[in-house]
Length: 111
Length: 115
Image 1 (cartoon, rainbow over the protein chains, first blue to last red):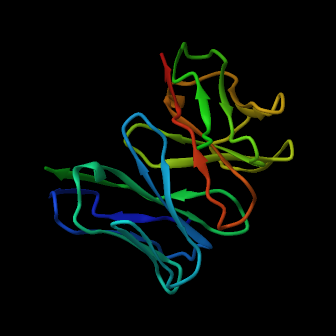
Image 2 (image 1 turned 90 degrees about the horizontal axis):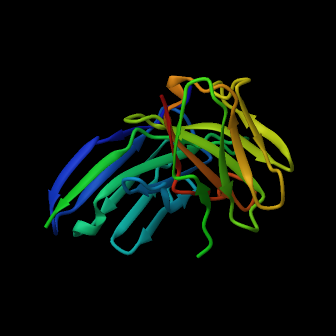
């Protein structure tokens, strides 16, 4: 069974701080997608990483896919209250189109 | 920006009753999915659908579940005889093509409450 473990589970920081969220597995994934989910809404896609070692930037968010395609990280620079939400990584094991979701990281950015 | 829409947003049903959850995927997308999220737990894959056939299903998707694309726009999930443990958020998603780099776009979900 392929699992994606995210850490930390909860993170409460002050506005302006930097943070990193980790998504780890013992399995290889063809790709990893990062989503953000607000209460009462569906996951909203932030980025897809496909190539081992790939780094993608989305404004203050930097996403990295591990060289072995077993892990990924999301780094937020100068966090803002609008970044508050549940961050989910989701992996495609390959040869299927189903996504395996991580356990989630709940981020709260205090003004 | 095109989006996946789901109705109803909240469905309350008596145990043992049938329920149909509806989704309108993004119009040029060819692959459709249902996921569920039990309160406090991870999002779980239920089923994927392409070309009017189920592509893959999880062990959760037993004989009580079925999916259908009754017309050119709707994609439905039916639970034939609901159980208490079916209470969850159900998310529909769609993607343009198949492939590991194809993003899946999610609707806002239907909250299903079984009494």
